[in-house]
Length: 614
Ligand code: AGP
Image (cartoon, rainbow, N blue to C red; front, side, top):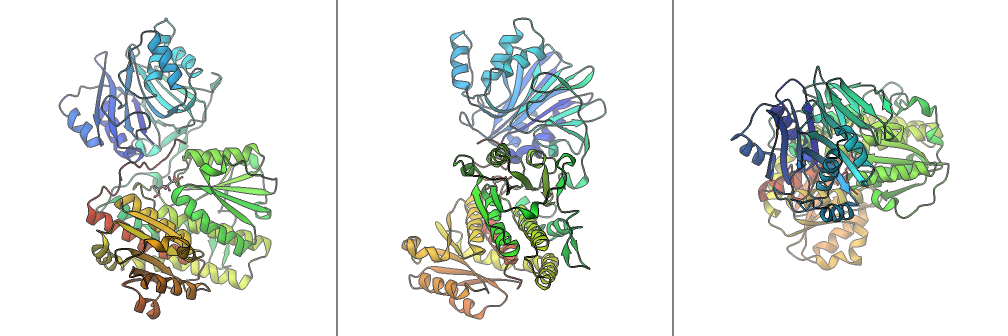
């Protein structure tokens, strides 16, 4: 939510800022802006809408600079207008912000009463005024920033420059993520390493409350109390680097197609082909200080996540209960925190997140840690706040996911949950050896089955042509496929703006059946397992009311095909693993419907990839 970038060094700053913003645009695209110091003057340019609007403005007037900041906005306080776009300026100070200042009203009223004029409706502008007010009393730039931080409440990542200090830049974080790129005689500040990974592979992750002060002497780090810190740089691996769309029209389509490769990476080194078992050594990375904790002995598992990550957790519950025999509860992260759940020492909380920066998921993790519960992250982004704070992490290795709508993050999370459940089942001896070997074999065959499934894309596109003008969609599934139905509906909503609902098929008769008529397409996932007959009955109920059935089947399913208006078949696989395959046609359907409706697929309206506010 909002992307921020800063640069100080020997090169021309603005092209680097624009390139960084391009890589951060997935975090918000309501407006974009930059501020830079050129010939001793602070210059600010901003534009409503995507980065391309800013670029159009910039091309008219750009002077060289070695210091600058840039921002791409997801609006929280104030509409997406040029006045509300960052950077914000007060006096000599210009800054960019990701987060929310909770006490901004009180601060703003006080500042207005003292004669300060505001030019935006944002919470951010108060910070610029507060720093400037301190700075005008004669204290140093750094001191003015430090003193201001004691006044503001909420979450923030800030990057601040000062017109009088051309050799200085300050970055600080509380709650929102911030990383520092360490180049040769140059430094980057960014919400995410993607912004600078093409320039330098050496990164330092700021911890909560920390500040980085850049000056003639290089960079100095300080903790929340202002004590000097020494920080270790991490070398970023190649798979964290941003890649283009290749031959695909959109990142979403590319990422759907990457799922086979992504799952191979998730499995790499974690499954022994010879022993047909899960290898624990490569599975979970733990901070050395945590020692060897036998997570498999947990008495209860609590899964938390948001959106797509919550859907994968709903399927993870099935894995942990059926394979490892561990009672498992699933919460939407934003609900978990406020319902004050009773937790005990034998619990294990697994926080799941693609980005590792989702504010609600982080809050749930922290809540569990305060209550003394063991925690583990299932996460894609290496070095993200969640992966560092959880102490233990199972990386999904999906590679950068750029499209706002999650696709490969979901399927790799399912594989991660499955590996973990099998490992726990192995350790607890709840997973019979014969079944374990069969499941591991099937798991290893999944990437190939996804490759086969990709050949269905044209058939899915044809179905999309028939239904893309519909106003509503219903998605039905049972058991493991109920979360798949939720995920199919979420994908369609996000990228096509069609109203869609996911429902447990058995629940349809308790309400949603009232919605069904000849205009309503109903996507039904038809399994091969013990609930198959029930699902067939649900299809009959829809047909009796003239609803249109789009069936997602396992292998060739003549019975379902005879009942359906359209069929997409997925390769046959163990019922446990089938959600990994059945979700893919739903991702494709959402993509092709959105394509026909002409929506902005990779950057749908109102959304942001990384939701760093509560
Ligand atoms: C997925 O398509 C969504 N854009 C969204 O629901 C997302 O899954 C959610 O915001 C959680 O993100 P995370 O996995 O990065 O925590």
